[in-house]
Length: 377
Ligand code: AKG
Image (cartoon, rainbow, N blue to C red):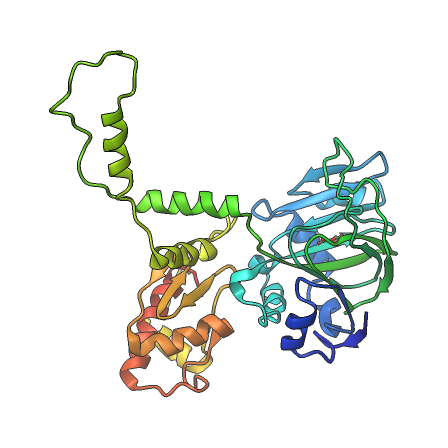
């Protein structure tokens, strides 16, 4: 396995995808040199005190134990070492976390899940485990020793609050320092142990099971279902057996159900709505004293706009989805909103590569103003 430098080292995204993504691990030395400055230990502890942010504390002085946050700073500092605190969805609460996640834009945003950040005391960790999704493990401050292996035996230790592999047989080992990054495909067993206190940033991806997709799709369909008519049987004959579900009833219900239809557009809209649906813990903060549209327009022309870290904006062809809803965009404004979706920021006075008429600018500002008033920018 090669050792390289800067996000993917000397690899182009194309080569990374062809040779490593979902295939084999990659270690990149110095991938994110500035990472130790992104989020401090105190910032992380502060996030762990927030009741709207998912956090876990894992200790093992007395056997593996897990507690769910929020935690007071006192609770964290009094935990029996070695301990580790893990904060999920840091990208939704922290602009620098969102910016780090977006550096992985060689993978579609639709696949990105979240940025988890952990802090561990010396010898802390979550034990040998495997994930069902790809993960980039970026070392923040301090050092962590990683052992990894692609073992077939996935047996877990029974009755633990966390998923720990019973018979871990690592085949490779590295010590990661600040900025180093280890990529692991799904199902690679791994165990990272802090060497001194350390922080680790995990960029994780969505990999829903077929069952989850099916259930979510049916629930999406159900919310939009409108079937006309009602069950009726004007020609009903006296049944031979009163308890029998008659063939005519089965045929009639089968005919009604066969009118439930979906097509590729339904699937596209399902993906747009579900992939941009805000996570349960997300609340948008509409501005308490919103600017007037005139002032908003002036500020936007001067400084541009940035999506709030928790805002999810995706598109498919000409259809846009913002935070779980269809976002209707007139054709002449689409290039601008597409740029906002891709870059998550838009310099409206000089959008890159987009020729802009005055009426497109005015219409874009009208749309962005609505998003601003909802707290989405
Ligand atoms: C993972 O994200 O799969 C990890 O193993 C990270 C563990 C940690 O940050 O302690």
